[in-house]
Length: 232
Image (cartoon, rainbow, N blue to C red; front, side, top):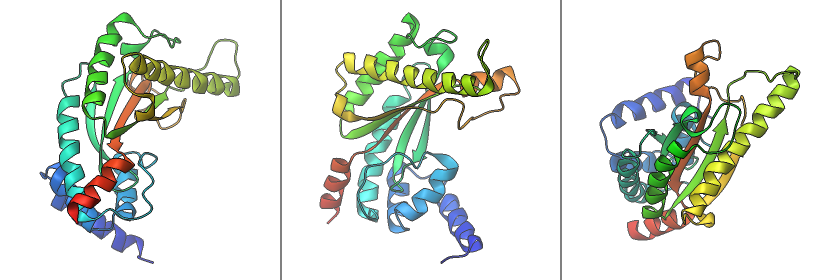
């Protein structure tokens, strides 16, 4: 087994080389450099390794480059969505994926899971992007801050926050499907409550950042298989 130092050196080298590369180039680099193993390390820092199609092995450099090109296109389209923070991340297969974060303050009123009228315009744009990239799978994840609920114990508050985060993610999913995004494209809808904060809950600004819905686009099993065939 590689030592932690060796892994760190490998990771640093991969990150340095990949700076300034397009998704196509980084897809080839990751595919050639160990697929899911390297992807898991990078994903722990920059993405969400819980997302990704089950392919049962490393994706080669050629297929990674083909997929990277597709994700370049998806990311560019996503960047036009109002009120969405768009990032490039790495999935469980070591492949490029697109992460879109929506501040729940834009989507929902405090303590509610009903979509506001103003938020629907952003989700309508998102629906168009998802339908334009129908070979991408989708994951939707809801989160809250760690603030308690009135007349509730900390444990009860955590349970209510988890339920609220799931309700919000489900509201987003249901609205997207009402706009003709195929249910089969949305692979997971989850609520994580107070888990995985992206900022400190000790400040108002930090709590606002933690109240969010994340939408991921990543390579489907079909996309991966087609890329592997093209790369042969």
